Image (cartoon, rainbow, N blue to C red; front, side, top):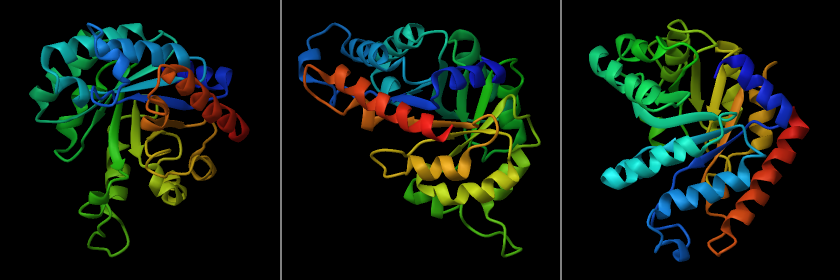
Length: 268
């Protein structure tokens, strides 16, 4: 999916919602556990209930890889079930020496038809470039995350005493690609930092997790992070997919997704 197509979907649906399919077998409703493929059955119901209110789905591959072959098969089935109109993200956080990254890129862009994959930039340009070589595919680089450990490295000041490490990462990585194939992960709990981040990368799309259970404010994310093309994909996972553990879990998920969409429409 190219940038124009993504922006058109956002405009048409008046939504920049990304639903995170971080599906944990221990958290899905108990009545699904006897299903031959409980993970896919849960995801199918969630997708059916939320697809009208979101523009993207993010599959956190760890929740599937941890189940071995069965989990990987459920992930593939889920990926192919997502409508072609929706932006599909592999939240895999890959990144290694060039020839290894090339294999990761092949996995998520050729073998599996994802539109984007999350990548860790710690190993530098040659670990990221193989992902950027694919046309109409997106590399989503970790920028400023919402976890406590972000303080260990990302928010440390450089020798100049002014620039944070994550700011240097953003400005450097932005030169490796373009706003048409490169996004950045910025945690919603760091929303007030978005104003300064937009000075560094004004035109790039940002994938923003952390709204909902983690306490991030959608209003603040929109206030500080929107650009002329919207430039945001705000992810909500647990707040939507685990909003209800009863037989009506999908109905409730749809209602929560719609609430996000209605609020987002106010900001666009």
